[in-house]
Amino acid sequence: MMVFKLSNWQMARSPGFTLIEILVAMVIMGISLGVLLAGFAQGHREAFRGDMAREAAGIAESVLYKLSSEPGSLSPGNGEIEGHPGWNYKLEIRDLVIKIARQGQEKKGLEVPELKEYVLTIHPPYNAHPFVLTGWIPAENQM
Image (cartoon, rainbow, N blue to C red):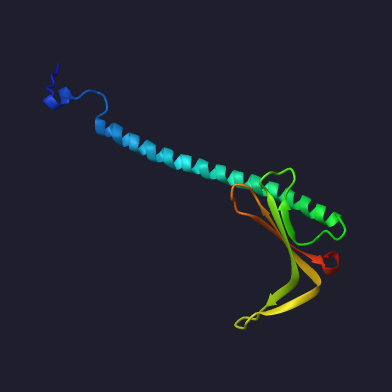
């Protein structure tokens, strides 16, 4: 039979963790949790922005349909959107000018009198970034 003599350090040490080991583990878990929660928050913000973009697309469609269905009503202006509290729109109609430039030369504007350009800006609530829709319409439809 063999007898081993343990030193005082080995006898005093319990089978648990030291305070330093626990603190290091807590720091690592805290950093991991912070990164994870930041990712969830960013995903939530992107989902909210997507919901607002989908709603803005539906609003733009209904505003343009309403304005184009009434004869002579497609005119510049702004207003609130019925059924969507806090949402506003602004419609601008201007002459279509296409800017063309060769490499190294200054831009020249080419005016197209048969077409008008419209810019519909949808302003969502909560001071969020506006959504902008641009298109062309025949000049005779614009009054």
